[in-house]
Amino acid sequence: MLTCKEFLNGLNDYLDDTADPELKSHLHKHVNECPNCWVIVDTTKKTLQVFKGAEPQAIPPDVHDRLMKALEKKVAASKRAVSSPNPPPA
Image 1: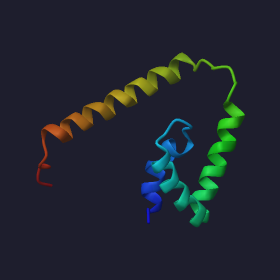
Image 2: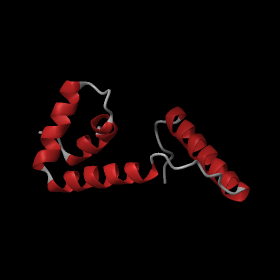
Image 3: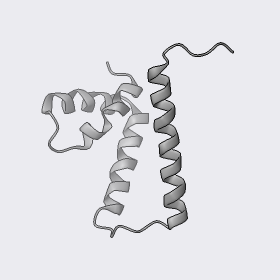
Image 4: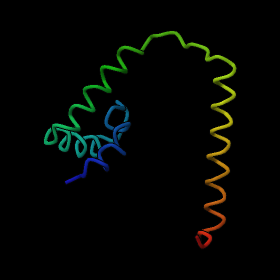
């Protein structure tokens, strides 16, 4: 049986109509047996319905700039972690 974390990692596949039927069946079994994951699926589906067909909205330039800086910082930190597998002593 899948854990909830494993199910959540496959949530996109579960909601994707073109995903592998065997995988979807495996995920479906979990969601039918887990009320917490069922709520997540139900809420996600409802959220997608609300936003489906909505016009994209531009974000303010200052928000865009802050987002890009945060993403660049995260990518740089990830690259440092990969190139230095052993953390420096504390």
